[in-house]
Length: 89
Image (cartoon, rainbow, N blue to C red):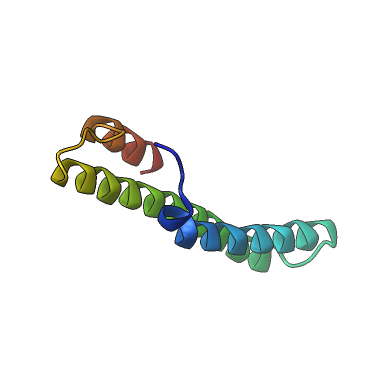
């Protein structure tokens, strides 16, 4: 299934925010700042990346369901989507 802007805009926003947070963590580490603050930011980055992945899976599920409703063959099977979902969990 190809990533389409309509399907991934929310995930992309989360990933861009995570990229900024990750850059901040790297700067904190390079500058020898407090480990608690760096780890808090790192946890936020991790959660943002996970949520972006789940958003992409959810969009794919909707996209494939819509294709099925129109009588078309979806680009991915339910099993393939489930495997991707479990890879993120």
